[in-house]
Length: 441
Image 1 (cartoon, helix red, strand yellow):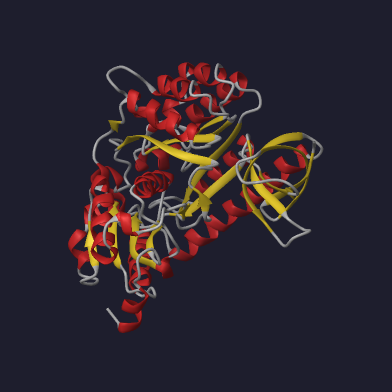
Image 2 (cartoon, rainbow, N blue to C red; image 1 turned 45 degrees about the vertical axis):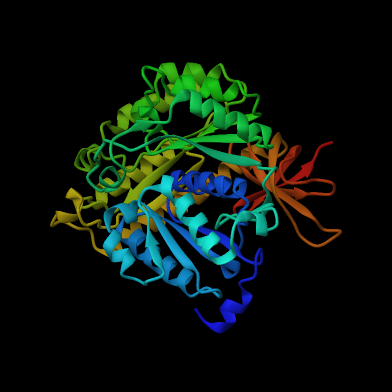
């Protein structure tokens, strides 16, 4: 450690930062670790003020692996020459490779141990918590600094693991088979979040539809979380085969449920779906969404689509494009197939050229933009409820940003508004990826 860095390490002047890469489950896990550190009196800060940086990793594609290694190197170069604690999926798959990046890298695949490792490193540098001022701020990479007692939206991980073994995915090997968080523990965690000011809880997991706690199902989780009095409950993502009548009836019975489902499609070609190891056809997907829209009339459906899976033809890509337009999705999350060593798809000889994958992905993104614009235009003049997540701008021109119950990103004049407020607005025109609105008192 350099002399300059050493001179900066006074009790309370630095702390811990997080860099979270990948899915919403990783984000939920990082938030849970951060809350535990806050309770221990450890300050959470920006990377340049951190003595310890936690990198929560993803390994879903080779591109994700490269992004993780870049993030670790960037963290190692931070001002205070921090210890970098690496956890998550890539830590489970390639701990030796990550540890080899530096003698300041500590690899901890088990996320339940991360808090203890961080506390050990902070104590080593600063001494016990009694010598540090109370921690009041939380910074999760990709988010903003927030009062720990005013959490606007929080992710609650209800299960871990997956046994679907899709041909392109390494996650089952990294996370193992589905394992539920006990329902009583979820009720406890949800109540604590509500008590701390959380207005929306997002139920997340690797495969939430596989939740099974000794016969208690996802529907039981939804009802239990809603019973805490939280104003909003949202599902992060759910597989098509789990969009059942039983689930839809449960959602319809919960007033707090946000009428938005993210249901991954990946492809609308039955041949490609079969090669991917996805256990549904395009027709079955369409039928389930049709029923969902009948049971939940205001439902908005968003989806994931993969461009350029091995063997996908031009005609099959066009089939997916036409299907997505016909379905009228609220948003498309588009990504190019990325070869992941260790998966069956990576070994296929019929890989689609990168230039062609990019062309297909761009066509899907263009469609996604058109669908989003059409949806926003149809809502002009409607009233909506916005959960304020951010307030910014100069004095006299302050603006608030947040999300409606049906997953529109909204910006509006924010005089007298704070993060965590629920605000009524009249929706206006869409500019970029945001809808501009006027507050309705």
